[in-house]
Image 1 (cartoon, rainbow, N blue to C red):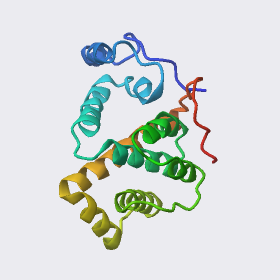
Image 2 (cartoon, helix red, strand yellow):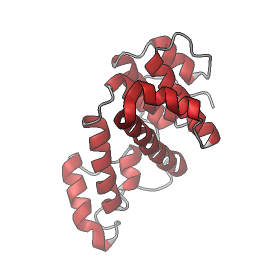
Image 3 (cartoon, rainbow, N blue to C red):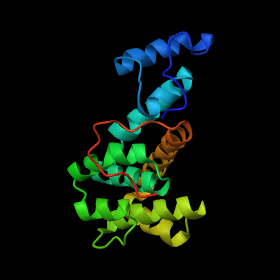
Length: 185
């Protein structure tokens, strides 16, 4: 159960009502689910985060398959049910094998990874477990994605970590129509 009610124009800081209206227009309504429903409580912050999201999701050089794997690796590493649910089916649709998605969800051994997939998973897991990335792991990811791609990958995972922090801390509800099994936590 969510820990806060949905934001309204009257509940946001008075100096941010213009940003609130801009975000509501951009989204087609006040978000009532997910990270947007939390972050819009500080509309200017939500507006700025939306710009980063737009770049990472629409202008990044990373393929949709790699983007989805990065999101799923982040969701699994941070035990974020909401992001997992929002991206597991998208990852499958983008070309991630069912076995990879299922084994990642269940914390089972990941076999048969491509070099790109291994670079993403190893990079994300190592960072989220140790808060650092070894030179070997960094080098493998750099070899796969180059400077621009690795910078985009790092910031995509960081952005989804930001979302996971919001979702987990504020207790965001999962959509009732979810199709994916929950993460075993």
